[in-house]
Image 1 (cartoon, rainbow, N blue to C red):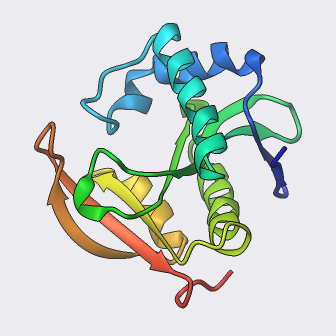
Image 2: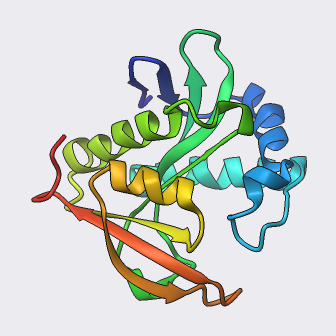
Image 3: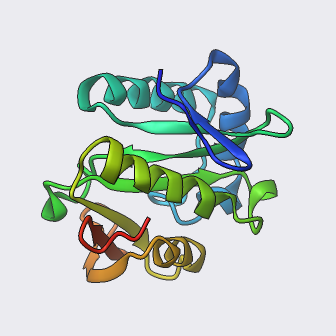
Length: 177
């Protein structure tokens, strides 16, 4: 079982008990504002997502980690690695992603979890390049990407919804872990 500890977080595989708190995160319109078409997700959709994320671990050797607060054991959300199938123009690529509950925003958890995930990608999984894809205007995600040392590679459009996207990237030669 893959687990990463940071000073304040545990990044780990998913437990059955994570479903309800992750569904609560996905049901928050503020959290989902910049994701897909902005629609919230229900418990069933969250269960399908977690199942798919776990399958990706088995198929790719990476996936999305549940992010747990070390001090309290609370599920804060997720961070991890995924193949961005929805944006074929960047393939082959591996994307770093994160989503935290609103009560965990503004405390540096996303950056802490993403930094550990980027290190995992480049050093443990041997990837030579990682991208981050965010909607134009999502300043919080753009800030996390910059903190990771990623630079803007291109602006493009979401092929389904048409809104503008930024693709940030970093490769192993630029990484200063």
